[in-house]
Every structure is written in structure tokens, then in C-alpha cells.
Amino acid sequence: MGPPARIPRARAESAGTPTGYAPLRTRGERVALRVHVRTVVACAVLAAGLLGMAVLALTVGDFPLSPSEVVSVLAGQGSPGHEFIVFTLRMPRLLTALFVGASLAVSGAILQRLSGNPLGSPDIIGFTNGAATGALIVIVLVSGSMLQVALGALVGGVVTAVIIYLLAFTRGVRGSRFILVGIGIAAMALAANSYLITRASLTDALAAQAWLVGSINKVGTEQAVAVGLALAVLLPVAVYHGRALSLLGMGDDAAKALGVGVERSRLVLIAVSVVLAAIATAATGPILFVALAAPQLAQRLTGSPGPGLIPAALMGALLLLVGDFAVQRLFSTAALPVGTATGLIGGLYLIWLLIAEWRRGRG
Image (cartoon, rainbow, N blue to C red):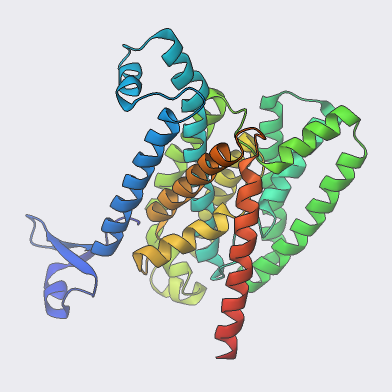
């Protein structure tokens, strides 16, 4: 949603309020705030959906609890058995899904706006595959701990981003070149991942393949805290640069003319996107297509011309929570990883998106 735009009051009154915006007048005489009403309503609806899904995630399961029992546990008055179910089994999974979905969605929203391309997503242009390569190197060659795997994924994502940025940089980073270079690097990283698995022992290969599917079946408090802290630090940075992100989507020349430090802003925003995607991937493995679909669904819901980072975060969190709840209930005996479900749904969404772009191009 980004910070509200500030405009001189005299100019706001003479020009009128843009369609879909409501003025919020302050005591000062110089400033009027514009709020996109549809975005506020959409965020409220998404937040209500998240609250409803959180209640379902904490109450429904093999050991069902009533909402009052969950509230008693959260207030510190529940029985030891109920505390174990809520705090050990369900709460870490709920928070991890929420934070990972939001992180991937914000990462995708930044890349799509910077590239001006709906395919600008960390799992399309290689950041996720690069993070997976870093994690697999630790799993296969070092047999490292979960912390080492997470650090390997973070380093792999950052190195991949640097390579893509340097290869795409020619008098500025152009969206189409950025996407094409990223797709090429993604293919190379995927080949490297396959090679690493073939060189691994049977035990390491099984562990690596299980990690590559993307799952929150065995996450704990550590993963939830790590992704939550990253989101709490980096989301405000991204929102602070929301105006620069909107202007960069118009092109470097237009952004420079409006006073944006193009390369500095782009580097900050890409760094935020990469770190969010890498930490989310480190926590759960690659969960595909949330970063691709969530920003676009949020944009359609809000109809806002801005970067829509807050709506995208809420949408990503809701998509992953719904997906995880669905696989738990529909495939309760198989422990189906949520990455399988998001990959299937996201693949269908990508096909629809490409067909829509093709029809638009012909029209």
C-alpha cells in the first residue's frame, strides 16, 4: 500500500481528488493526505480472511480445540496438553506460513514493479533456484545443520542476485533483459541442483529432494522467528521506498527527472527482495508461484496504481495459509508438502497469464 502521498493542500483542492482516493485533512495548512479507499477495504478483507484462517489452523486438526480453549492457552490458562498442541504443533506452522507467504509476495511485488513484467518473480528469474543451490551445497557436500542450510540458502540467493544484476546492467537495468538473464541463470542453477543430487549419497539425496519440494510440515519456532524478524525489518524499508518503486516502474529517465536516485533505490529494493526470498526459502525450501501470483491478485483486488506492498503481503500470507490448510485436510494421511499444491496451482496460473498476455498482444 505504501506511505500516503503528501500533496500541497492548495493544489489538491484546485486539482480535485483522484478517483478512488479520499482526502484526510490534517491540522496543518500545507498538507493533505490521500488514501486509496479500495485498497484500505481490500486490506481489511484480507486481514479478516487471515484472522479466520488462523482460527481454523489453531482449532481444527486431529485433536480439535474450541476457540475458547485456544484463547485460554494464549492467555496462559490452558491445560498442558492444549498448550503442547497450540504452541508446539500448530502455532509455529501457522506463523511460518504467514511470514513466508508475506515475504515471498513482497519479494515478487518488488521485482514485478522494477522489471515492469508480470514474470518478475524470484522463482522465475533464479533467486529461488540460487538459494536452493546454496542450501544443497551444504546438505550434500557438508551434511550441515539446519542453521548451516539456512545460511547456505541465503548466500546462494544473494550471489545469484549479484550475478543477474551485473549481467543485466547495461546503462541501467532494463526489465526485459533482467528477466531473460534471470531465466537463464535459473536454468543453470536448476542444472547445478540436479547434478548435486546425483553426486550425493542416498541419505543426503533424499534429504535434499525433500527440502526442494518446499514444505512447512516440520518447521519449528526457529524458522518462524527468523522469517518474522526479516519481514519486520525489511518490509518497512520496502514501504519507505514505495514512491521510488512506483517511479522506477515508469522508467529510469522519468524517475531521475522526478528526483529519484535510480541506482541506489534499485539496489536497496533488489536487496530487500533477494533477502526476503532467500530467508523464506531457507526456512521452508522453495515454495513456488506465491511470489508470482500474490502481487497480481492483490493488484486486481485493490485496483491501486501504487506498488501495493502491504496488500501483496496480506495476499501472499493468505494464499499460503489456505494452501497449507487445504493439503492438511485433503491429504491428512500423506503429509503432502504445501509446495506441491502451490506448484500445481501456480503452474495453471502461469499458463493463464501467458495466454492472457498473448491475447492482449494480438489485440
